[in-house]
Length: 386
Image 1: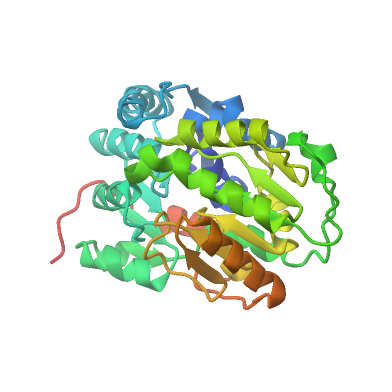
Image 2: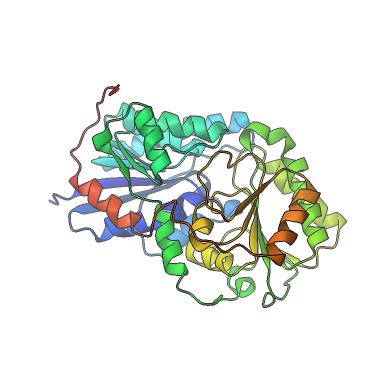
């Protein structure tokens, strides 16, 4: 019988996998740890890119799959999806009997992981706590901080916030962001070494990329979800005006995703978008390689705040989704206004800012986190320190 410490990591969405891939690799390689990988929620769904396919392709053994996404893409569906997740994950944890459960970031599905583990007296580790954004994700993130026993934060400011929430300083560690580990490897690649159309399919025209291209990834904002169609239409009009080759990625499964998706589809039917190609998903290292050799990223994805800061990729950050998050000098913030977006893109194309920043770490987070998961004492009860 193995005496290895069992670490259950729950992946609930497309971005979560790229966030913790190097953590999974480091746990898997660690001689004293056993990885128990659980894949749930939108990470299992084809229309959000089937992240599970990339997980399996990378050679990870999945211990359990949890299908818990309720259709609707609205606030009620998000709440019910979380509830179903609690029910299903409780059964999974009962079967796997992990020593530690690891949850990632701030999406609503991660709350189900945190609640299930906490009520079952399983020590909970939280990656990327202490950050601020100003929407429902921030409530979820801070709530998970209070449920978690170990905190693996990505920046010094995040660490300070976790400590201000009353957490034990001996259990709060600035490990850096694991996604920067992949960015560090991608930074060594001198060119785009794959054909995105051939490798990932997608729909739309196939513009020539050799003379520069834009990347768009824009998600709905949960507390502004009724305006998601209006928000995406402003970006669509801006991209039409800029008239450059553009690779556009589908949104996350959030309240308002229907509005975002419908806005894109309606715009495509009404206007000829002969320089835009749409993708559902892409392997993390390929996506970062694509970003690294682009003219800029447009939208509101946290990849623009994290990985693009390390790579120095210019980012046009639209709206409030990344409000107050630590950022490098690569970001230009704009509102949901097509003219502001166009002006920012033109500014980047005239004078691209490729200033790099280590605000989210330097590329060794996965190994740091695996070592801490092995070394830390097992605990599931705590009191407020201050």
